[in-house]
Length: 152
Image: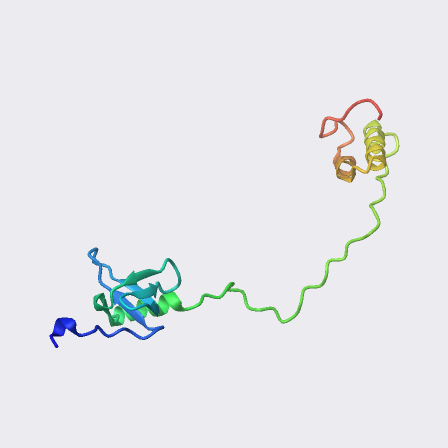
């Protein structure tokens, strides 16, 4: 039997092989299947699979094997050491915050308190919180936000 008629040995499933390309950089892959005339390979570390003729494959060199080891070594999700204790649970109050108390004699505080009460009656708690923050932070001169001058 001539040498060209001899069947090409097929690499073992799961073994890594290299395929020389015309670009100079060989393609490295793990053998995932063989269906008669072609071998199916998957790149180390994942990626698109490809097929190759068994005669075009060779064993990886030492440098290529080192690259395969790098590409197939799992990376931990975080570099933080694992916790040995759980975090305490966050406890939220079921009770809503009480309305803010206006500073006596401050017209801005009285106006903001009226708007906050109006928002709470309409269940607009987000806007009510904005008015509560305004009352807490205003300098008792001109308000930081543009409030309507009339009462609700």
